[in-house]
Image 1 (cartoon, rainbow, N blue to C red):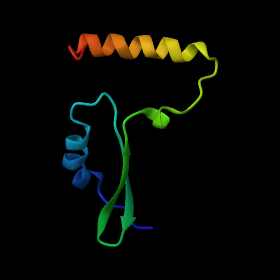
Image 2: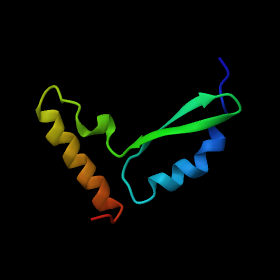
Image 3: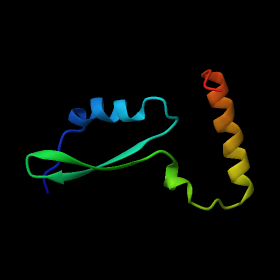
Image 4: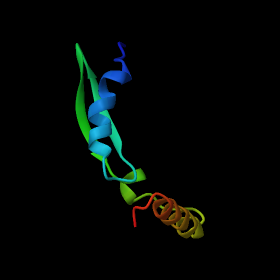
Length: 73
């Protein structure tokens, strides 16, 4: 299987992520070029369950603290 160079996708991927805390961008590896698939703004599309449940609150507190430290609140 042929792989494309991730550097060719970095500029548009960075542009999609502007103003967001997180972005996952998926590409298809088609002959000759990468093909955009989709992007998600939350890990697991925000639907993954946490185990233990309290982990959700703990990570949320850290996320909010990081946003505050970056002046995004």
